[in-house]
Every structure is written in C-alpha cells, then in structure tokens.
Length: 259
Image: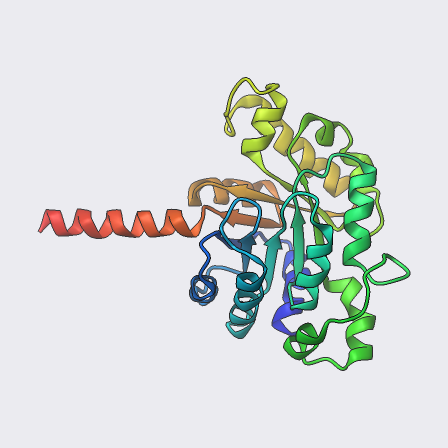
C-alpha cells in the first residue's frame, strides 16, 4: 500500500493536475485542516515568504500525513540542509527557490537524494514512522518518491532550464509567475499575467515534458489554477491560507449584510 508520504510521486504521474493548498501562517493545524479538504491533493508549506519555521513545519507535516496527504515545504533561498531535515521529518518533496543554473540544481538535489544519486545522510526516523516502511525499504524507495522542484523565477533560470532539468536528482521545475515577471522585465514591473510571463510558462512546461520531467506552478486563484491544470502542469498550488481566510470572511460578511 502507498503511504500518504509517497502519494505525491504517484499522483503527479496520473496525467491530471494535482491541486495543492499553500500555507504560510505559523499554525500547524491550518495545514491539517486544509489537507482534509477532498479537492486538495497536497499541501505546500512556505518557509521562504511565510512565517513557518522548522518546528512548525515538522508538526504540520505530521498533521497533513494524518489526513492522508503529502506535504511539500518550500525552503528559504539556499537552505539546502533544511531540505534534508524536512525529508527526514516526512516531507514528500521540496521546492527550492532561485535555482538559476546547473550548479544550484546539483547542490539542491545532492541534499535530497541518498547515495549514489546524492549526498543525503541517514536519519529519517519520523519519515520511517509516517511511511510505515522498514529502514531498508525506506532507503530503497525514498529516492524514487521524493520530488525535488527547482524554482524557475529569473531570466537566467529560464535561459538555462534545459541544464537545470538535465541534472540527475531534479524531478521537476516549479514556476513562480510573480518573481518571473520581475526578472523578465529587469525589475520594471510586477505582472504575473503578462504576455511575456504567459509565454515563459508555456515554454517551461514544454521543456519539462521534453526532458521527461514534471512541472509545478503557483496560481493566485482557482480560475488560474484550472487554466494551468488544463495546460498540463502536474502540481498547481492555489492561492494561500491568508487568501482563503479573507475570501471566507468576505463571503460571510456579504451574506450577513444581504440578510
């Protein structure tokens, strides 16, 4: 039987978009509640721009796993050692921001994969509990189910996307449309829905497919998530817990006022 921790690799390969919640608030139960929404196939925990620290992240991973879903933290820029610790805690994958070239990708992958594919050291005790696997079975299977997402957010990264995808141990790219719009405009504007970014989103997906690898992307709304899913993205993270909270409050207040 496939454990919740191993589901990410399986579900991203079934040809349909896997929709994920996105959490940045530093309360583990929020991720746990969102994981119990049937439409979410995974939960992303944002340690880069959210207020989630390592301890909060590990507690959230356990709650998400208890709901039968995989958890994918986004680490802060360059904190690859944190990726290893989160995988030990039971994360199903890692999103690493600002992966701009082959060397960035190689270093990231080396912290996420066990030898001989990488240099991840042994100590996944919580992950073994969450997967229900024996240690040797976990070691044999982890490299196959852990998913590494290299974020493509700059012109440099987009220009070198084939080099990044060619690195052994990189399983997918992940597109950040807002940062990509800043990078492609040389800092002139924030326009994640602009024509240049839209073309880059299609290009990144095409290059991923050509490399036989997957692609994920952030969507600011459900409508945009549907668009990216139809385009062929395998993992689509929708909005954020703050957005969900504000949208729910606005809907309740509108209903109250109409009464």
